[in-house]
Length: 282
Length: 173
Image 1 (cartoon, chains in turn green, red):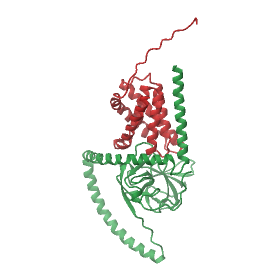
Image 2 (cartoon, one colour):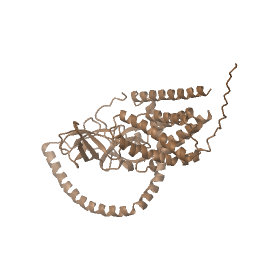
Image 3 (cartoon, one colour):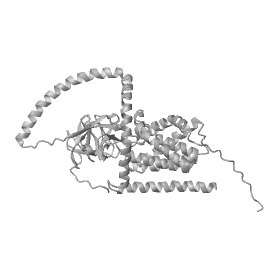
Image 4 (cartoon, one colour):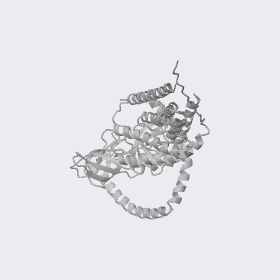
């Protein structure tokens, strides 16, 4: 009898693993309206009101705790920020004059004004629940005009894209998710690469930069517009580390985004539809 | 049948807690996995079948909410539930230190299965960084939380004292 139970236990495991592989395959193959994708949206729709409620309760508690713990740091930071504001004011003045000059020059050479996109402000109501995936849930959905593949920005830089939308909430996969990849350009050298997420927080990997490249620490990285998903010129981050491996074809480049992905609160969804028509499913 | 239903209901409650409260409990980026703690505790108490089913259900819910690839959590948590059930007789859950150690190992197994899948998906982060940055912190966090979760769970669990098996050889049948 014990043998029978033991065999039955293995049978249960094998059956469930087979079912898991079947579900994985179906999820990969089916389109956006498939059963598993619909189940994902159903779970998100069910859980997002609870996440919003818990976040609204816990955020003041967390803020209060942070305030108590970091009081000294906050004072120092406040002084530093005041100095930075003065410095930035000077820069804004300088940039405004450059902008005016730029628009005059553009009109002279017949450039079309770059298309300005509308944005939808949203609040982050659900943070990543797993250590392995990096996505957040925001409180704006289909009824607010959010659509799949729309870019999402925070703190003036790209942070991810909308991957799933329900009527009143959406899932945003962040740039540091291991599955995320964005075509970018190094502003100083004009080289094209791909920024990939890493499992390490707030460090992105810039790939396919030639070993002969003149890329340097501090170079700005912006979206290239290639691939049609993201508009050109969205700020992604600054190069924080450049190394060269022995026989590699490419340099190992790390990019530091200006925002902390683990403490996002408000984001902007950029209302731009992808240029490329994406085929659903695989 | 009742332990299966009960484990699934508790896994559902754990999943809701995981999705709503746990993200606010991160310490240096590491988050505990309440679902894996409950899966392992059910495995230790009721054996491999219930552990596997609890893990499967918890993995399914977790993958549907946050997984880019539905299926990895299903497989990893089912395997953890199964192995937790296999050591049912070796783990005396009332011994907190032993339970904490077992939960630590169960979480490590779950995370290493994830690491394996991550490498299949093209992850290039060095294994040392993954182990020190994700696997060990979350396993430690889970081990610390295990006694508290167990205290809450024990009222739902019915411990069966297995009758000793006496084997008498039937030599002259």
